[in-house]
Image 1 (cartoon, helix red, strand yellow):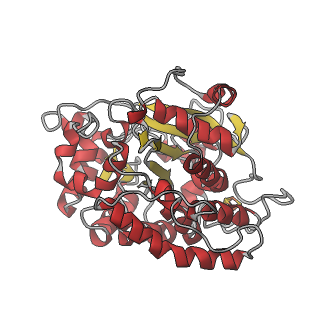
Image 2 (tube, protein in one colour):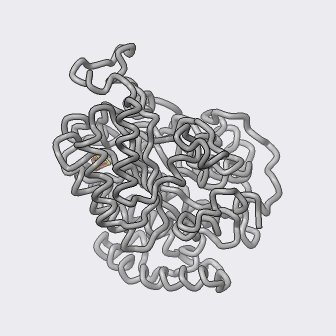
Amino acid sequence: MSPFGELWIWNDPALRDCLAWYLDVADNRRPAKFRIATTVPVSVDLDAEGTDGLWAELERLTPQFLDRLDAVRTGARLEEPTKGPSLLDLVSALAQRMLESCNFCQWNCRVDRASATKFGTCKLASGTRVSSFFHHPGEELVYRGRLGSGTIFFTSCNMRCAICQNGDISTDKDNGIEVDARILATMAWILRSEGCHNINWVGGDPTIHLHTILEAIRLLGRGADRPGRFDVANASLAKADPLSWTPLDPAVYTYEGRFNAPMLWNSNFFMTEDAMKLLRIVMDVWLPDFKFGPGDCAKTLARTPWYWDTVTRNLKVIHDWGEPYTIRHLIMPNHVECCTRPVLEWIEEHLPGAPVNVMDQFHPDTFTDPRSCKYQEKYAELSRRPTRGEIKQSYRIAQELGINFEALTFEKSVWGLGIYPHRRANRVTTK
Ligand code: SF4
């Protein structure tokens, strides 16, 4: 067994069960889903076929893909990639079609981002910007492992959270560098070849960049070779930690001689069901944020309608699909009863046993930080960290409900003293 699989946290049987597929891919015992998708041929012309025809093809092929995934999961060999277009090409093609009448997320703006004649809520055209990418040392241990989570921070967001913990990235759409799919694929390749345990797509929010991400994953699935030095040099402009020009042993980042890495969707989960259907084909593990309760908090703090209905629907979808996932909930000052409690109650009722990180590291940032020039007085209730009493109360609620939260929550928290000795305090990517 590799060092990643030997980490003490995998001794927790519930976590190991929930994340078994992800762990197998991270250790290259299994090919990632995007590799399996390259073995499923499509029977339509991706350029000539109408959009409805492409969706029908996805509906037809998804059960075949899932059968193949199950076979690989239980030890079957990975078949050779198709000579012609595959399911992986199809999901990328569908994302490009969606961009022309954008419904990546629940705002459902239906603007043509490809021609940039009109902008939706995210204010983006087809371009994608990356703020930075690096080995993230602060994610949960199941993601950061020993060598870090291969995190790619996209610029911009489709929500307007006053509580955003990455406000510098999410509120400035010109932050970072512009990337195309090829540079994005190179970033992923660099991170994995340097030993990262996963490719962590995050922001802002990654949903609004779905077309570029799926095209990058398509390139990773099709291309067997390492990227050229020119691409590496371009990508490295956004690398926030030292670049290793010498990859590790290929065993670290390949399965049967070709690039392999678990894909991690680290998102606010405000995407549409159509976006979920594409992501299902390529994401090996999901990391949803579940921030607000069913009252008005999502509207007053994030200017986001339909939040509760959308996020609970999407959580239920990945649960019913049997996907590996862990949930994050950030404790906010003055929002334990209206947000933390109903969020945890809903999880207990609808996703029993789901691993949850109940996070205590909220800090005032951007609109809630009195030291920031963007501070807004109306968010004064959020201009402090949660008190010890609020944090204890949140843990008590989780305990009383029987939520599976201790392993993820306490592994790096002072609250875990005496329970998990390997804790380490670091910032995570929660937004
Ligand atoms: S990504 Fe969401 S917010 Fe942006 S244009 Fe598409 S539907 Fe609208």
